[in-house]
Image (cartoon, rainbow, N blue to C red; front, side, top):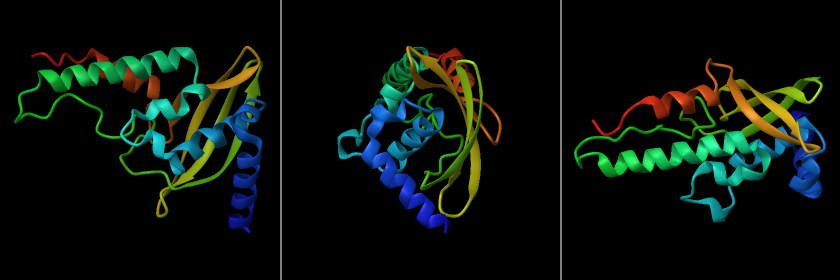
Length: 167
């Protein structure tokens, strides 16, 4: 039954497209994770934020772009035999494992803010992350991710940028 629900949900996303996903925080969340599960060829080798740039707030996108620039700067400064300062995995995910399945959501709304708990799996382990969405000009956009294992995307980005890579 769960597979049927997943297939119906995927078909709905495919038919509705990203523009319609702006209509609800739950659909934005589903579209967000779908872009990590079904990576388009045009994003291979590109920063992960590019595949969801239209689904995140301008503030979060600016932080992600700054982190990417800083990481590339650190790579240039690091000696060839030293690992540069970097986030070792996709910044959107707490652990380095890939997401393979989007299992559904539960959500709550308060005014122009929504918290959507996304139930996720890598095929072996299941976990949940909470996406904080804000309604911006009538569209729901991801403002932050609070990981079920602790921490948050915004805090990870801020902490990363506080480390000096030129010493």
